[in-house]
Length: 304
Image (cartoon, rainbow, N blue to C red; front, side, top):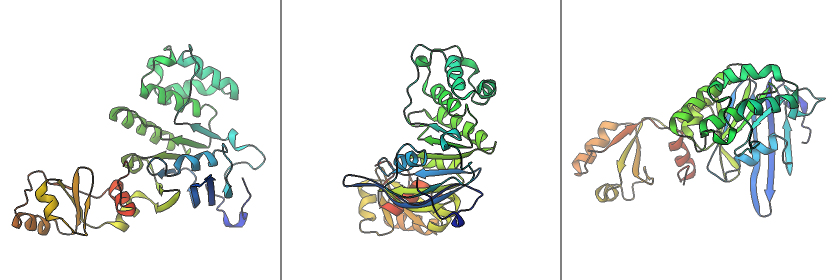
């Protein structure tokens, strides 16, 4: 990592990134992005698969070297490797075969000389009920909680989570979100990647939305939605009559299942639908969310 101009960096920041770039052959995986992560906050990198989120995270973790740009950790000691102060939960992590959960914890703790943390992490990550179980027999949610405990075993100042709830059922995802919230409350800085916008809205104080290697929007979820939307979003099933009614309507957006219309006056829009004999039986009216923001900014759905 290259050194930056120290005078431009807030010493209270956890991470400072400036003009970061990484290319593979003809692919600009990360294209001149800059951002800052406040100490003790949860910062989210959002975007579809291939947006550059994981590449960015791996550069922050020191796993790959940027082509150019600056990464600094103002809150970490300058004379030690950052790996001593960060915890990482990868998208895919192989656990030792034929070993119990408690043995995994002990093995990782011995690497850092931190066996005193084991009991605390068992309670914090809710591992009590399957401590004596073979790691190969864990459910998805149990496995993610164990991997999180292993990432925290040396009490890191910064925790990196790469799409930590991918593949989990809704209940396991929600339980994991609550667990991450509790870790943030201890003062740990968290950086996570996700393509779940509801996850970002629940967890993150600050987000950067990425698409094709660039940051296309940055701010708190509330600020971004307030900046780009007013009123509500009306969603109608894509029936022939709905498609015909909204044909060439520049305010309407077509998604996989719905025609969406953002409006300041719900009453006016519904009156017009009724006047044009468009059924409103299955109409949905919602507040705009980050999925809507991504569609507005990029012209395509997040998971497409």
